[in-house]
Image 1: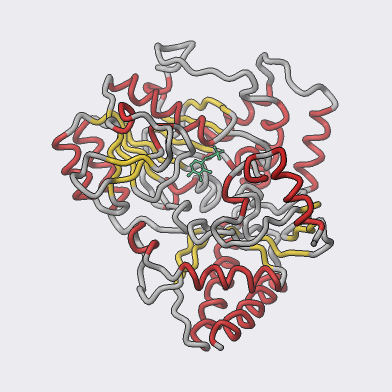
Image 2: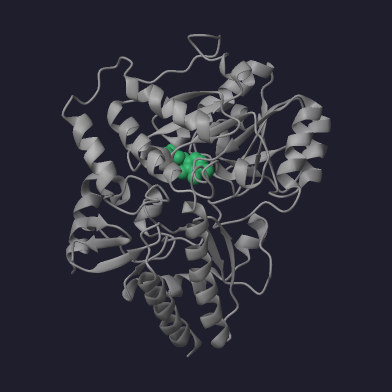
Length: 427
Ligand SMILES: *Cc1c(COP(=O)(O)O)cnc(C)c1O
């Protein structure tokens, strides 16, 4: 047994499934989870001393690679002053100011501790602001694990969803409408029949692998929301600072009313945030009637890591251009190797995120199509790559991420590993 297997078995004795977030348990690919010892740049070192090129990068949070020296130094300096006071500190304003400066639609921003908290709070705010209860989301989009968002569309009418988890009360399901991603006519149909507070969407879906909005989808949502007095929420927990310094809203030039953030803005530490139009944000306590709070919200350690991260990202005008080049180098390299072995594969990419799909389709634009991909082939591919020292997301439903630390050598090494994997899959 490897050291990793031993640790996984020990963990299972005290932690449900041995993990603190389900995807880490490798249920999506089979086999045992890997325990890591350390990370540096684009590389991870397992407890068994094996080196991996990392395409999970803490689910996209580590866009500068692991152990960025500037972020770590800044955090160390803040640590020396104490871990938090439950009172305001200057660093919170500095990070808020930076976010407002970089994200075109954000005028006021409130810090929380996770993406889940950010979306949950943004939805309460939208409901409080509009005095309406119903919300629209899209199948395959993930917005954290609060009750009202763990719902997908049912097979019958548009408006009766089904929960994706046990424990979600029926009364809650009744207020969530889940529609097909990229389907604007379903949105209009729902808005005509229901009184809707908000539409929440991943402007680039990164939790059903990586699915891009088709031309006009986000613009269509903006228009529909304006027509029906609905709050448009972009969940940019993943895409914020991942595809552009101004998020997907800058990448696609569509302004939401509210934006939720997380992952990258914590520089690797736990964080979330939601922000947007002043008029709406002023509905939040202590200014307004919508309650929202957090003991550790805005803690100086996370704020410091986040600010250090955004300072580096915003200082380099070519950062996202260079990152996209790396992403496309990787996916086009993998696709051309797959083609040599007659394996059908396609990719979606945006900035530093990508999705590979084992499919004959030349476009994947919704969950239905993602589910039709060859998941069994993906599982085999995943394990072959893992053996070669490539750590990809252990699920066909997760996006991949590039960091600025992935070198040409790392990318070439990965493409060669894919070549070997395809050769053995073809046999
Ligand atoms: C990761 C993610 C979340 C949840 O964030 P947590 O910090 O895990 O609670 C919400 N929305 C999107 C789009 C995400 O990618």
